[in-house]
Length: 225
Image (cartoon, rainbow, N blue to C red; front, side):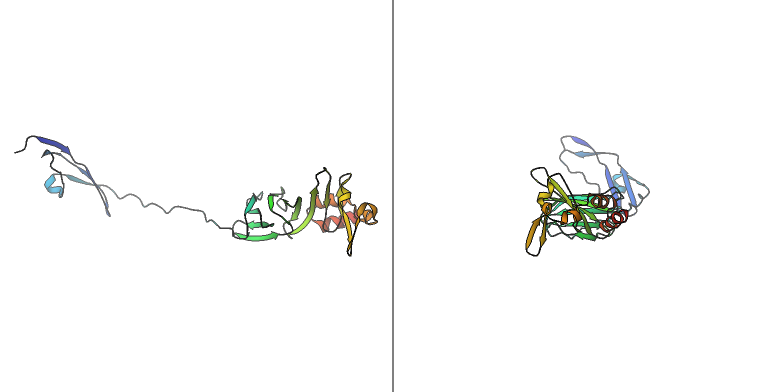
């Protein structure tokens, strides 16, 4: 004999291929400690309610991600172009890479630093780039050609020099002491040598900075003279 009855409410939710069935149960009486099982809706008195199938879940929209492979060492700095279409990266492999973000392709590799590149930046028009390195130089690049336009060097005594690959330079009041002219195996201080009159051209250096093109700056300055 059963000592007492236990009132149990059973709710079953069955999900099938054709839809969701919500079973609304009556109150069942069962002996204490007796497991309750509902095997058949007819015998249990549960009434199925057929609900409409839920709408299909669209696949998640995920933007394509490119793994940028080009450097062979740690990437220390990145910068996005003003239009958001390209990016710069500076690495401990001593290079700067210019990337096309829509394809993941390297557009240009800027390779003249001699130590880790620690900072990179775009000009406001996105045509030139700056890079700063542990080789103590900051360099201005023409991104279309990949050519170095200008190299800026600062020294511990506060003096500095900005010099172009073509040899034209501008310097702080005492910065020229750090510039040498090499002829064969001999080096001469530019202050005491005739080349100063030819290569000390702050006007060309300024134009190169403004135009972002060394050859165009030289041509324009020479036309003005």
